[in-house]
Amino acid sequence: MEIRSRIYSNIMYVTMSGELDEHNAIYSKTTLDELFLQSGFSQVIIDLSELEFMDSTGVGILIGRYKKLKERHIPIYICNPSKHAEKIFKMTGLYNIMPKIN
Image (cartoon, rainbow, N blue to C red):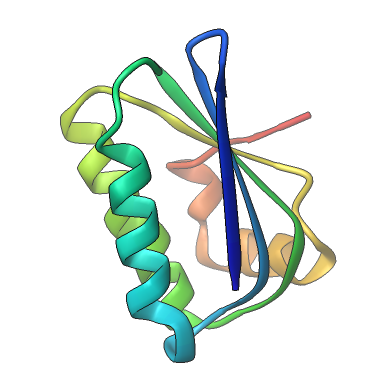
C-alpha cells in the first residue's frame, strides 16, 4: 500500500495504490489520520485509480476516516475508482456517503 497526498486550492488530494486490506490496515489508518490532522483543506478527494484490491477491512478504514472528517464538516469524494473499487463502492453503498466525482 502506498498513500500519496498534496493540498492544492484548499483540497487535499490523496492517491491510494496497492491493496487496502487487513495486512496493511494499521499503516493505512495511521497514515490517513496523520494526513487529515493537517490544516489548509476543506475537502478531500481520494483517487482510487491505482487501488488493486480492497476488502471489508478497507471499507471499514474508509468509513472510519469519513466519520472523523464529518465531525470537522469536511466532505470526502472518490475519483477514478479502479474496476474492483467501483464494484465494492456500488455493492456497499459507500457512494452514498463518499460521492464519486469526475
